[in-house]
Amino acid sequence: MTSTATPVVRVAVVDDHPVFRLGMVALLGTLAGIEVVAQAASHAEALVVVAAGGVDVVLMDLHLGDDSGVEATREIVRQHPDVRVLVITMLEDDDSVVASVRAGARGYLLKGATPDEVERAVRAVANGEVILGPRVASRAMAYLSGARTAGPVRFPELTDREREVLDLVARGYDNTTISRRLVLSPKTVRNHVANILTKLSLPDRSAAIVRAREQGLGTE
Picture 1 (cartoon, rainbow, N blue to C red):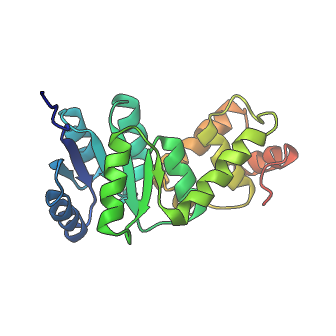
Picture 2: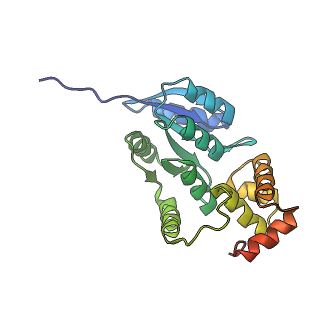
Picture 3: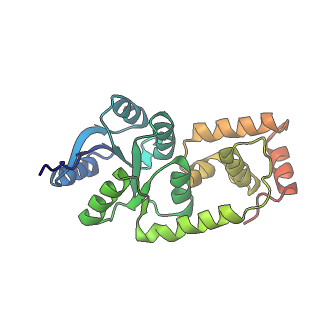
């Protein structure tokens, strides 16, 4: 009787903190059937190593210096739909969880996760499952429930991300605060605001706030 060997899960670790990155590489190196094939410390490096091929799972930090791990996740998933992204971060707020899931992450763990939790998550996302750490699962479920019960889309000419930015603009947040809440770079937020003004034919940010509030955005 013949047996088929379990395929090795090939992992890329993306984190701008060398100590954590090397520690994660060392941990994964002790696990049977998991091989670290690449490391990266920035958005650009992450795209390069994934584009080189041979990666099944990307372990992604959300803060990559001045770059955003959410943006990197979105780009990786768009360009390489067979690659699964597992976010592992210090951030456990609602905005970070939702932004990561919407960007296409298949898993979300906090950096306080145990080695067993990390191993289980890597194997799960490699197998096509979605896995969330217990402290963030309820946030994701609340988001999904809200998405199912949402009414008509306001400002359909905007993308989902632009509507999120407009909602925060309507709440009176500046670009720096919005970038932090959505885990985006300040430059990306500025671009979104400019696109919103153009698409809605508005002259400035104040006009955008008025229009958004007229449509019910900007309320807690």
